[in-house]
Amino acid sequence: MPKARSRWDAVSFAMYGGLLGMLLAMMEQFCHAFCPASWSYTPEGDLLAHVLVEVVASAAAGAALLAGIATIRNWLNRGT
Image 1 (tube, rainbow, N blue to C red):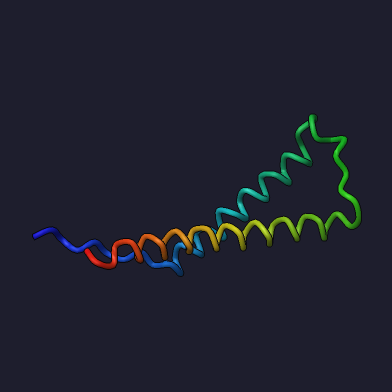
Image 2: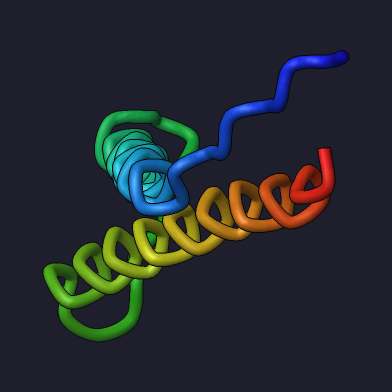
C-alpha cells in the first residue's frame, strides 16, 4: 500500500511567496538605482509611493501564487 502524501501548508507557502515577491521587487528597485542601463528611468509621481506599491504588490502576488499552488496540490492529492 503506498504511503499517503503529506499536505502542504498553504499559510507557510503564502509567507514564503510573499517574502520571495518582496525580494524580487527589491532586486528590481536595486537595479533601477544602480544599473547604468536604467538610470534614465524615472517613474511618474512620488518615488517612495512607486517603490512601496511595487513591493507590496509583488509580495501579495507571490503569496497568492504559492498559496494557490499549495491548495491545488492538496486538492489534487486528496484521494491518495
